[in-house]
Image (cartoon, each protein chain N blue to C red):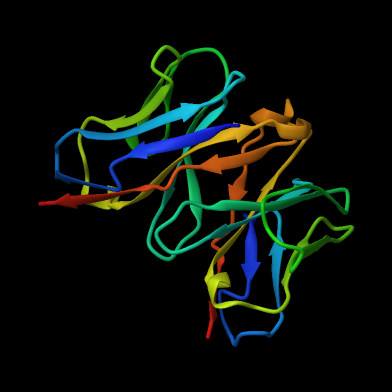
Length: 117
Length: 115
């Protein structure tokens, strides 16, 4: 059973560019959340997708956007990259059918490490 | 608003010694609490979680944590450290805001194990 997968593993971009990161959830999961982990910090919630809709968003600017596809995979897009966007971007998947929403365990992928120069 | 505080950004223990990683939370509703481990250049792996019921929770790799409501704590322990336990550990609380689940993480504790 494949876990959460993310691509690419590493990425180098320059300021002002745009980037797209991809995530495939764990088999049977329908909800995808994205987190940003800056160096030396804990992950920060960016947003969550369910049924192809963004349903919750953290304190991130509109430069951060996403998409969820019918097969539940997801993309994270970041426009007009800033140096401060350099971080590890983590995707987590979960399922709403396993119990109450808050009890769902989120399973994390290995992350995409983005470096903005 | 919910928050998590992990006391000690770095903890160093000898192999075979007790591991104690501290986590305190703030929550206006009954919290669901998690510990995740992150090995170098990897994503997060769930160690254990508390939702309801028994307050002492056992996880993988010999770790356990006890939910203490009166102390708003969820400390992670392991009786005997192994070299392979060296990693970063994150405590997280589940946020119900809007009825949807998101995790709020602490800043992490880096555990070093020396011979």
